[in-house]
Each structure stands twice: as C-alpha cells, then as structure tokens.
Amino acid sequence: MSTEDNKYSYELPEELIAKKPAEPRDSARLFIFDTKSGRIDFDIFSNLNKYLPEHSLLVFNNTKVVPARINLYKKTGGKVEILFLVNEWGGGDTSFKVMADRRLEIGDELSIGEKFRKDFLVEKQESHFFWLRPNFEANKIFEILEEFGMTPIPKYIKGTDISEKELREKYQSIFAKNPSSVAAPTASLHFTSGLLAKLSNAGFDRTFVTLNVGLGTFAPLTDENFKKESLHSESFMIKDDAVESIRDAKSNRNPVVAVGTTVARTLESAASHIFEMNCPISGSTNIFIHPPFNFKVVDCLVTNFHLPNSSLMMMVEAFLENKKSPLHLVELYKKAIKERFRFYSFGDGMLIK
Image (cartoon, rainbow, N blue to C red; front, top):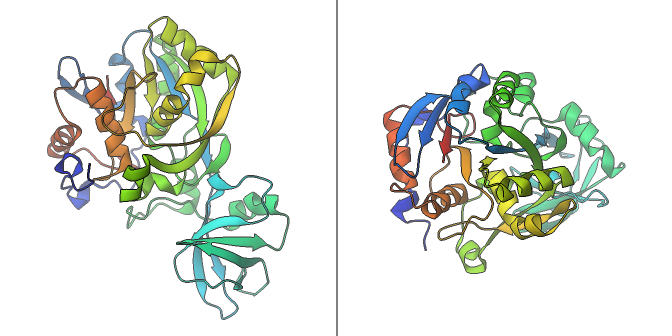
C-alpha cells in the first residue's frame, strides 16, 4: 500500500481552505452520506439531529488545546519558535520534548523573554525533536504557556486575521477541560450549547472520552508506518461512566457515533477492554487504522475534511469500506469541492452513517 495511491489524492482550490470557523459554530455546512443507500444530502450543522439514527450515543473528545507554541530567545538575541509537545509530557519528567523552527545545538540556553535569562537548556536531540530542561519547576510550564504561548493552529491556515485571544476560544470545543493537546479535535468545534441541547431534547445521549492530540495527526506518512503498522502514540482515558454508556449502547444495538477521528481512534484502540471491563480504561495508542479494518465500536462518524494522503483520510476510507460504502472517500471529497464546502480544521463537517 502506498500513500501515492490516487485513492487518497485530490486537488483542492486554495480558497476552500477555511481560514476561520463558521460563526456561529453550528452554522457550518454539513455533508451527510448514508452508506446503505448511497444518498448524499447537504445541510447545516445545527440540523445534525435530523440525520442521526434513532437512539444514537454521541461520543466526544473533551481534551483541551494548550497555547503550546512560544517564541524563545538565544543569547545572541536570535528568536526560535518552539512547539512544546505537552501531549507527550508524563508529568514527572524534568524535560520537555519540543519541535523548533530552526537549528538548535545541545547545550544552547534559551530565554522566555528577549532580556536573556537561562530559562531552558537544550539537553538532547533525536531526529527533528529536541528536549529542553527548564530552570524552574517543570509543572509550571502550563502557566508559562498560558501567559506567553500561542495557539498552535496548523501551519496550512495562512493569512488568518483571528487574534490570539479569539483563537484560544475558537480553536477549542465548548466542553474542553483536560489541557494536554497541541491540536484540536476539530469535529467537535461545530458544536454549540444550543445544538447539544437540541440533541438531548431529540433523545440522543452523549458521553466523553479524552485523547490528547499530538502533532502526529498532521505528520506525513512514511514507509515505516506501513512496515510497523503503527502511527504516532497518543495517550487516552475512558472513564467508567463512559465505558458503561458505550457498552450499554452496543448491547442494545444503539448506534455509537464517534465525533471525530480522535474519538474513533480511542474507541477502536480500547474496543476489547470496553466489552470486558467495568472500570476506567487508560493508556496510549499507536494504532494505524487503514483499509481493511474491522470497526468494533464505531457505527457512525462525524468528521471534517482532511489533508490528502493523510492517516486521517485512510481511517475514514477504512470506515467507509467497513460499512460497504458504494463510494470511496475521494469521490465524496470531489462532490464536496464541487459544492464549495470548506476544508480542514476550521472547515465544514461530514456525517457518515
């Protein structure tokens, strides 16, 4: 299998890359695809309740994005943009794994402000990652990032005029509460309190899991991924009430709707434990979902439109094939492009059922 396969390639006009989210959030457009009938409908996200199967359980990712991108300064005064991979920090560790926008040397000292202080020491390097040892208590990093950091929106969102203050609200779901991610679970960005209330009133239950999203969600696929049948590792937690809700839904043959690929990844990684355990499930996953794949938990998927040749496209294609879809994902994307849907993190949404 190759990422060069046309199965995952498409041409997207640059103007269809969304530079800002819809306002209000649930006014984003919604592409609905019924895999059984092959029917396609177009609507707006606030009408999601009209298209969900009866008695569906919606599962959301309640992780919170940290303003993990920060400018640090060398002794020479040179500026380095650093991304703290807070999703990989174990809590007890005394150094942080980061990415930098320019070359660093082991032993370099970095300062939070232009007035130089020895705030960080470059401790080691592996491939294009560096480890920074702080000159302060490591657990204070979140306070520092909150004060000096920037929201790590994807680099392909160019020319946005959204302020940092707005980004911290807009690149965040309304139910985010566990600060450990460097990218948002973007399918969740379409939900408002009004839409959640509408869904509840229509009889749809919901529950939450946590998967701390890393930079790997945007990383290009390599031959190594296919050789080892694995991707980047991300930590997750499914609390006992969520385990119970998901198991009950499956037992009663009520559809489980994964809101986003991060939720799908979490649920399928924990599938065997969900059916066997009556306690919280936590761990890390490096699962690589691509065709063919037997989905054991997820029955429906709410998702955004993803980058070409990405692991996320492969996951959604695997879901379509598992549902015996009459259309491939690229065929659906081409229809969305023709209808001028907006793509990527701030773009429109899709329901596959």
